[in-house]
Image (tube, rainbow, N blue to C red; front, side, top):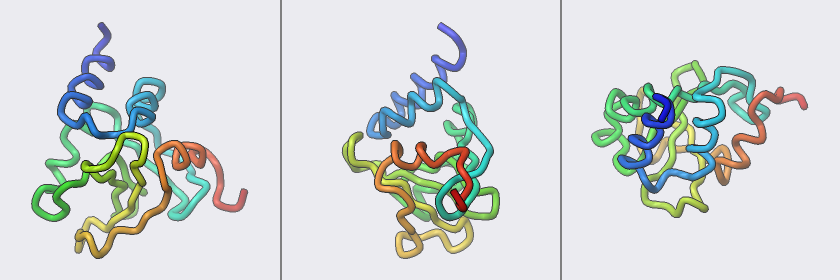
Length: 125
């Protein structure tokens, strides 16, 4: 098995409630850094290896328990999934890294699938 597949399996084992579409995205792209057709207009999805440690680095269990950080906008905000939702009903939220709290969550897409459809598009499209 390739390294990326092994890393994705580690991630899936640790966070089994994350959307299947997210795991497939990692398998196909292993992270990206490009325009996003919805606000905030830019997306960085962490490569699998970074995704394995990002939630700990951002101290999500302290500041935003029950959420998983999978990317950001490159401008001080991270994209997160709730960990207690169905793999089929998992909205994407954005939250600032400074002042991170449930009160600061902004839903930017109802699912990872709808979020992913906006990757590579311009907000003006």
